[in-house]
Image 1 (cartoon, rainbow, N blue to C red):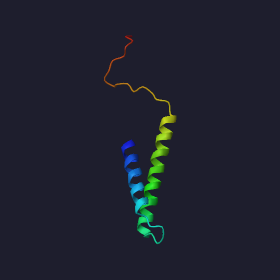
Image 2 (cartoon, rainbow, N blue to C red; image 1 turned 30 degrees about the vertical axis):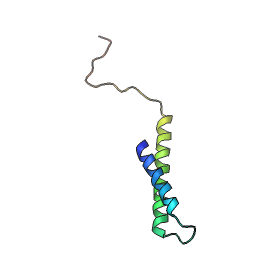
Image 3 (tube, helix red, strand yellow; image 1 turned 180 degrees about the horizontal axis):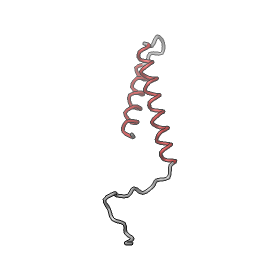
Length: 68
């Protein structure tokens, strides 16, 4: 996910540099908006995941440490 965020930020920066001050093409503006929305969704997802306490995943094939 982090690599995708980096890629989106790079593409957004590139589009912003290419945007003229006036008369920007609608396709370019739409692409920029789409990328910004995807970036926001990914950042929100990372924030939500970091708020969830991590849990230990057990190896289903592993035996319990406590013999019964």
